[in-house]
Image (tube, rainbow, N blue to C red; front, side, top):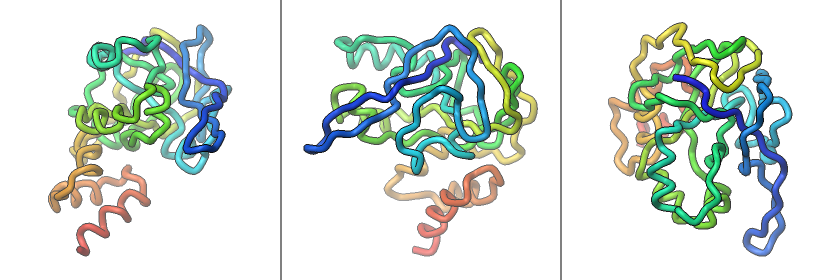
Length: 212
């Protein structure tokens, strides 16, 4: 895997249900390296810190290979890297192989795969169509958030080098599909619960399904 683009955003104002809101999802490529810190990407915009940024969502990466599919669905948009709100657009990323807990070296940063991205209405704002949320869930190529184990800088062209593969085989794709499955597999839930890198608040959500 390799970084194709480094993306950050500035606050963008929009109208939603009669109220004025802001979002940081409008990200665009920048030529400069990005500094990944424990809780955020320096100089990026995070409006909603309840659902974005922090230990488990410090940086978001998305696959370059997914772009052609979405360009065909939304040809009228002004396409550029960062369309999905990702900080790093990467080549060669496969969520069906990438495991929760995998550790990568990128540039001078050491990162760990933490959880898939769950789309919200702001992705619909970026795509000018709320239907994209349903399509994104059906597509099941979500990209993933990263936990920053060692802060450092990354730049276009840097490779994502696997340092340590998680012993637990729970993948990003399995995690994403489990989140949205109407009938959740107890086997998949247990796999998630046994993975030490799955955030505790997600485990609590899965435990409720087991109890029911």
